[in-house]
Length: 479
Image (cartoon, rainbow, N blue to C red; front, side, top):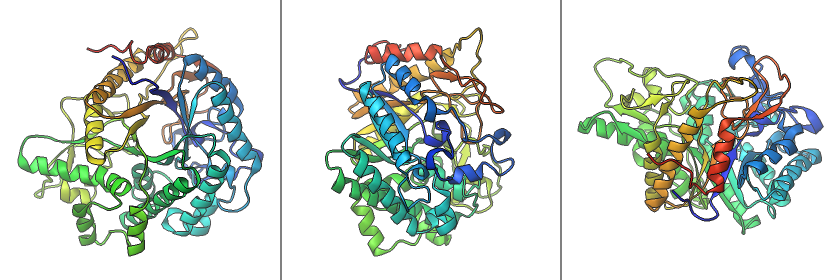
């Protein structure tokens, strides 16, 4: 199996999960710095104060990327490292850090892919305006974007606006398992609308300031299947896809919300307030590409109106199944009921493993929106064990091999996928699950209780991915 010439073989990370240095060199606090102080919100009360200390190890980590042969590295910028209060004076030391990272990547022929927002809103904006519930935060975001476009627009070609807006708005404003720790669907849909406006305006600004660059959002996508061929189950799956996927992607790509879902939210009095000007803004903010984060999809059946039996337990550690059918009267309970898929295995964390679903997802998204795609996340979280100085993560190799084969098949189907960023390059802080849930090609010697040595150790999967990159996919095993 061969991939297109100049395919961007990459890996990804997020600032809060890797950087550490949470108050070094002028950085201000983020909402995650504060949220992680609430007892019981994260496993063993873990936080990103040190994380895996990429801030002080970036040269070492980029040298390992170069050794691997990585063609691209997707990272996020911490907004409060650039603007400590979210909107005021620029912190030059923060800018200098990211300039050094970008320069080091480019020195090693690694394409930087810069994510503007990966969930770490400056705490000052949460306090002053109420975060994403206020339109003032859009203006602050645009100031932040302008600073980055000004400083790095001539260096960075690919930009991501928001990472997994569907996840951070739902977990933050509906499930109270991410900051700002709110459980209110009306507030969630309103905050989500404001993020949509920020996304559209940032894209417009980018096209003015960086016309030679490319920009788009990253979305956590999973196709939803019907449990059976019963027309009622098929309709439930159509509704679930509109609610879980189209509600975001239609806005990104078409500038409008799907009618069915908007009608339902209005009936339930939880729809966002959308002005005529808002509609114009959304129409004018078309992305150049879409980033797809793929872990799994879901399976549903028609909602049971007679009794409220829950056949799939909602678990806050799985952000890709927002199973609202566990609550009394929710949009989900009127549309579909989540169930187990009897044909799929699961990870240690109970996430379904569905490589073919990856091909389905890429095909569906491209046919609907006709934009180039880049895989901005895909990977396996597991309990990796260091034994005699080595990590044998054959299970990760198997997982990635199966998923990459399906990406290759989607490309053969005609889907223009131009890159794949595995999650993640090194082990990192899993937002709610501490440091035991490891994703990286590089093992980091630390645990939930101590940073220990922070030694970097190449796993078996490091050498495997190196071979995949070297042969442009030629070493993938097609079964």
